[in-house]
Amino acid sequence: MWPGAPGRDTLPMAWLVRESLTEEEIGSGKRMVIGDAVATQAMVGLTTGAFLVAFALQLGASNAMIGFLAAILPLSQLVQIPAVHLVETVKVRRAVSFYACLISRSAFLIIGLGPLCLPDHLALPALVVGLVVYGIFAAVCTCAWNSWMRDLIPVGELGGFNSKRLAIATTVGMLMTLAAGYYIDWFDHRMFRPLYLAYCSLFLLAFLISLVDLHFIASIPEPRMRTNGVGIFKLILDPLKNKNFRNLLRFLCSWNIAVNLAAPFFTVYMFKRLDLSVFSVIALGLLSQVMNLLFFRVWGRLSDRFSNKSVLRVCAPIFIVCVFLWTFTAFPERHALTIPLLIGLHIFMGIATAGTTLGAFNIAMKLAPRESATAYLAAAGLVNSLAAGLAPVVGGHFADYFAARGLAFSVKWTSPGTEITFETLHFSHWDFFFVMASFLGCLALYFLGRVIEEGEVKNRVIMNELFFNARRWMRNLSTIGGIRWMVELPYAIVRHRSNHHGRKEE
Image 1 (tube, rainbow, N blue to C red):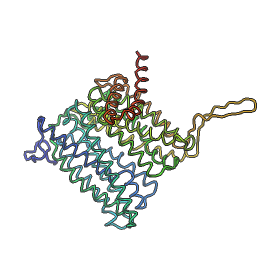
Image 2 (cartoon, rainbow, N blue to C red):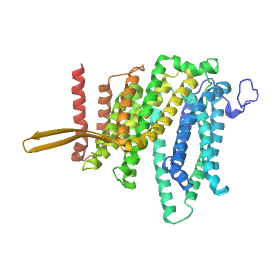
Image 3 (cartoon, rainbow, N blue to C red):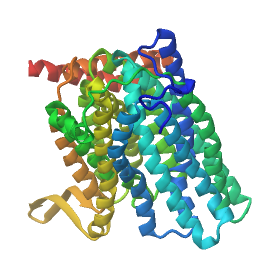
Image 4 (cartoon, one colour):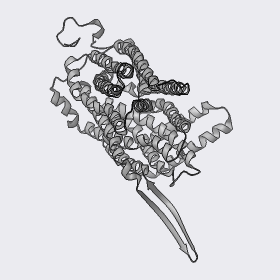
């Protein structure tokens, strides 16, 4: 039996839950939650994305194996279904989170030590096994963690607190990614061989960081879990019976499909079609991350003051437009405006991603009933993960099909002795993914419109607040009038057009 299970008289002090928490305990818990976010993001920065793919390639992975590795983590979230029953039975979410994370992060040892301790032909299977173990128990931890945070953080502070947490964690993740990338290059340039040893050391370092993270998890206080005492099947079906939450699930599903249908191909697109250097791609990614950081706090304050849905209704359309505009970065090949357009797209996508990430996370926590938070948040996480896992698989399946196809629209002018043709649109290969993602994003906005959240306001209210915050931030950025004027001018133009559109609506 798990420590803290109902009816135990020998409940370990470390897992004691409280009927209610004091302000001091909540404040201490928040600091520990931020510490957990920092440690977790440091581990993510060392072990996922390009590092995981490069490690697998060093071990001899095929393209099919790379696709399989990419699907493991999202699809492992299916484990959240039985995890709901586990959490509802144990009722001590800190214990579930701690032990699940301990097992999950131990997988870093399997991955890091596999190539060092096993024959060469078993190193890649060890990576797969380690990733499966990590994904399954990370899903169990997430299920307990989300319900725990729903009870720990006051609803009125979700936006501000989560924006701060995400901003700090993202900063650490960026620094760890840069440091790890520099380390891999240094290892390679020094001609140390085999190169996979460098990746092994990253996973072993991630395991050491996870030990610090376990301390943070064990130090977070837990209020008593409120449940409605129903069976597992009713718990799973309850979120689907709630019309408002069902509309939210539709939004989350369609939105994650739209995002993950296009996002995995952005880097490939820049490398292969636009022929950008590695440094250029990294620089653009960092630009987007910086804008993401700057706007986490802005969107967090706005979501607390108004509603998460209001923030999503502003950020989601910005993201959709940006995805569609990727089709113009090559027309049909790289042109003079390609780089300026890419810079603008990364700036606005960074801004929009901050709002959509924060808004989608907060609105699920806010709309989940307190007594059924575990099941509701598990349903939201399950929908997100399935969409995020299946979308790139579908995209990869059709990648070769669209590679040999194109669609162009042109306008032709003819006169005696003259014939001029203007190409207005040209879609090929990855452009089809961007267009399809844009249409799916519009569908997601339709489902978002059917979600009801208290505090919702019109878009122009959020835009006015956003421009006010941006203007104040830029005023503080520089005391040089000419520079400030150049930076504020685009905002002034957009604000004027937004206000003019708002008056027309009235």
